[in-house]
Image (cartoon, rainbow, N blue to C red):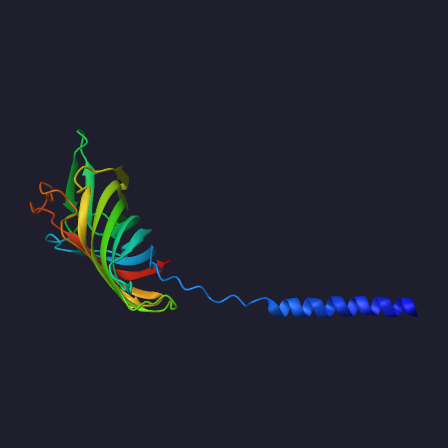
Length: 239
């Protein structure tokens, strides 16, 4: 009986000690980062619209754009709701339209409009581009250190360098595929705007220069191809 009493005393003392010690442990408070930064990674999806089309040229299907990258957020005020963003990213853009591209024996690209002049059908005619991009943004937002849900309006300028372009044609006369056509402007740039709340943000890109070089003309119409792109879609920002 004496042994059981001693054992009970030891257990009770240990339990009370543990409870007392646990009660003395302070509950950690939430750490607020007063030097927080926002929206340093982005992903976007766009519908690409061709504008300034030559005579007879039209879009023939859905033209898709994808983009993603990293932007360094540089706050400009103490509240940190105004900032500059400098970044680097990648984009893929496809354009479905009826400008045919063919290379002659000297490997020079020729451009013609696929219209009623040609008596053959085709199932695909597009070109798509891969680019490295450098976005620059002026950022306004209603963010605070405690909230991850806020309104934002980001305006900016984006420069892109095409490191690859590919033209595809499939039709009755066969399949044609060309890589790295000289007629495209390797350097492309335009204005950007993204605005929204929390996850959902609308995105607009307006190109300031044409896709093709100044000397590129359609074979049938003799017009310079000055068309450019407007991209409309959604962009998602991640810390």
